[in-house]
Length: 484
Image (tube, rainbow, N blue to C red; front, top):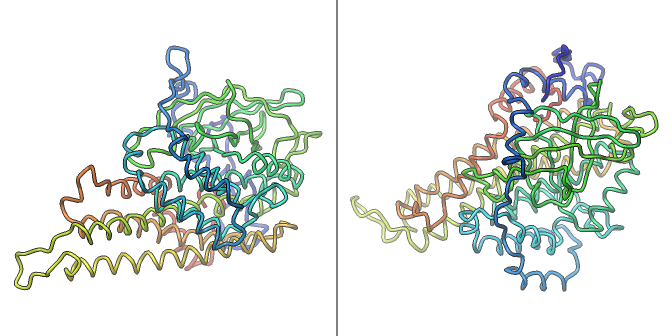
């Protein structure tokens, strides 16, 4: 985040859960995030030069061809959207199975997933949360988390992309006015748009300037998941001469958004999470979420209440945990099938087993993996239901207290800890029960661990453990940050 050169006043640390002492606003969230970040970041002017080569935009990499999924497009186009939770989860399982067929090959090729996003669109999964009046599924977040998990079993990158789309599509429901949210949902659901986001709080803030009836965003973000293959992009920045932040959705395909096409990491290789330069993107004031376009000030009833920070645990942290669990479940399924077909028993023991599937240590390890993943799923479902209930029963009046928000955040933190530990343990441990031949590149078992390892570095889970310990010992709920 960019330093303004001014002293940042950090809200006092407090163990109380009193709403009056709990700075549950967007301003407080971002103030907390400013500590030491300016020192650790590269300057925007230097980093942004990565977005171009000799003054020209970086060349886009090859993309996948949507024609490869023609059979599935025709199948899904002939079916109505699912109407019940179980049907949505079944639809996600169908998509997951399609993606799993060549996930290892696609991951190595590292092509931009244009075809795979088209598959998600044709399946209807992008519309899961949208209002039925605009053609959406109008399902709760409890269903959304399970759908993300299901898709991630077959392809971690696509599970992550779906999760990010759902969370950014939900932004206007949390920080926008009712009228803005209606317009946004009609736009996204009515057009079956895929949404990305150039919102990375560890980078410098985007600068926002006033230009009459418009605001203008400028800046650079090192990470922009899904942006390259998105229809809309969520932008966020700080308004000139203030410490106030603004969210807005803009069309992605415009000259002022310049992608670096530099995502080439060890895991989640198909997420298009590279950097992006935002070069004077103009947005009408009426699309500044939660702001009054006449007075050009934030609406207190929208942005200065605990509800405005629900996006952080709801859409971000719990989305992460669910695709971690999904990836680990995919690894377990893949490995168990490999073991059944290929793993040989160890002969150099007093009582050699007849087959790999009757090896006691193999069965014990698989049993432990299954037990821990089932426990992680159960915990994730509890937290998911709590989030869903908040939106079902509280959305109309946005009447959640800071203490209630903090309590549900600790359920989400609990899931993050368990999902991280379990997913890393399972995706690395499956090699112990598949054998040395399973490390061959052609097998593709390594992609599950690489995917989990890559994203679990997003924010240190050690701080979640500390946060939960403080919550248990002192009853202190965490102050909202981008990671809490």
